[in-house]
Length: 258
Image (tube, rainbow, N blue to C red):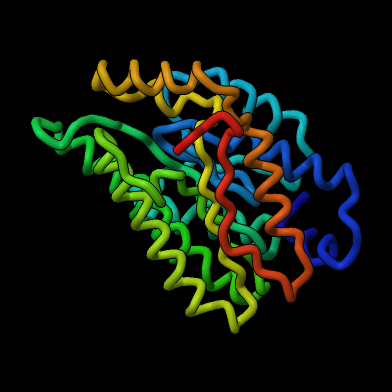
C-alpha cells in the first residue's frame, strides 16, 4: 500500500492484497539495528555488511511496485532525515504514515559501561525518532496521517542491565504522548507499539557477553513474536476509521512473563 492509498483504505474493508503489501513492508522493517533507510511508508534501520534481513528487504524492494522506493538515510543526521522525507513526498506527492522503527539495543550494566554505547542508543532510538517526526509532521498534518513509534516493553519496565536502553524507550513514550496531545485535534494519530521478544537480530549486537547470553537464553525459553506479528499490529492501528485512535499496543509472546 502506498502512502497515498491509506485515506481510501480506511473508509472500506481493507482488501487482503492491500493488507499484505503493508504487512510485508513493515515486516522487513522490524528489528534490524544500525544505520537506516527509508521505504515509504516506513523507515528501517540498516548496517554493513548486509544481514539476511536486509537481503530479504532488497529482494522485496526489487519486486515491489514503483510506489515502494528505498532511500538510504541516517536517522542521527538531521540533514539526511530531512532529505529522505522530502524525496518521499516528491515521489508520492504526500505522506500519510510514518513508522519509526530504527533502533539498537546495547544492553549492559551501568557500572563500567562504555558510555559511547549510551550515546549511540540515545542518538538512534530517541533523537532519531524525534528527528523523523520533526521532518515528517508538516506533511502528516496536511494529510491527517499517523505516526507509529515502535518502542518496547522496556519502555514500560526497566530491568537490570537495560538501564540506558530503557531510558531511550521511556523517552519515546513521553515524547509520543506530548506529540499526541499537540496533534490529535488536528487529525494526526499517534501510536506507540511496545513489542516484547521478537525473533530479530536486535540482541545480536549486545557487546556485553553476559547480557547477550541472558537475552539469547530468554528468547530460547519462549515462542518469540515474529516480525509479522508487529507488522499486523501496525496495520491494525493505521487502518482504523478516522474517529478511532489506537494510541498504544503492548504485544508480548504468550510465554513472556515480564
